Image (cartoon, rainbow, N blue to C red; front, side, top):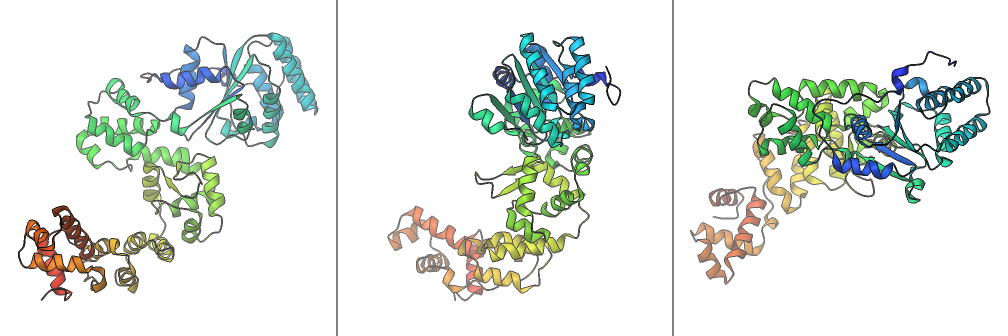
Length: 468
């Protein structure tokens, strides 16, 4: 048996099970279902437990499962198909020898694959073949070869593929025909119950329900994130204090994101990620404004296909956000000058009528003295004025005068009665309104004046000439 490079026999072994696994019965049932179809495709970012899930399912499934761990060298079609054949234990050694020798010297790829399909059908053995780390395959020739095999796969053969990126195979058609299932990060992440089991049964930590709930929220069920957090907590002198202050910048998480995610991207992708990390949510137009590029839509779709910790916020795939921990990491990892990025974001939000976001980014840019904030304040809809005034107060500047038209006639009447020392019940009786209606008017004028107490409301109103 001859290959262009020596055979790595450990590529053909199921990975050993890790200690302290959380049994994922709901996902085992989904894989049981997939084992009756042509294809099961698992697609999620690094650390969502794809390999661990498949190997643990394989060992308890009672089925014949063969395994092939892929690497960058498998982008050469002859090598890919040779390893695929070597992984299938039901094929005779004679067939494997002839196949490998033939594929090395022949360009009739389809004829060779047809011979393989016929041999698989003749063997009659029902088995599952797992192809792990398929995201490392970027060769169109390999994709075409695997698509051909899938199209003509005999009923006794079932493929399971794990990848960090979306499928380059005709997955939609196979799913439509009931021949494939897909598991993505939404299904692969730990549920609240699985996260609690992980902390309570597989670590020495004794965390409260509230502490576990916070970690679940921040990690969004990302399995590697939960494990790295657990490692960090175990070495901390005061676990409750660590959890209370935790936001995602700890060195274990930082190292993982650096080594497994950011450092593996092209310079173009890294630049996009680091610049857009200042945004809580974003669409293509906003990304273009902040990055100074014109490939926002293309990049967002590429990031989603690559499962780079990006979360769509609507069915149309218009707005996105980054995973909480990934966003925090990107902001800490960035050495960019951020003020200019925030100014671009503020200008975009102002131009699109999103006042609160525009003010927030202007403040983040340090533009406290600029007329931008004053203009935003003047043009803001009433519900944003309280927010804007508080920002001015926070930075030690005097807020612009509250426009007189912001207070309705009824709100002015209520304010005058408050100034006269009337209670809510007194005001309700005098204006022939219910007590709840009076409470609503008071809350509205508090918001418009940017205050939270009666004394503050009276002080602001007198300063703005609304009261004597």
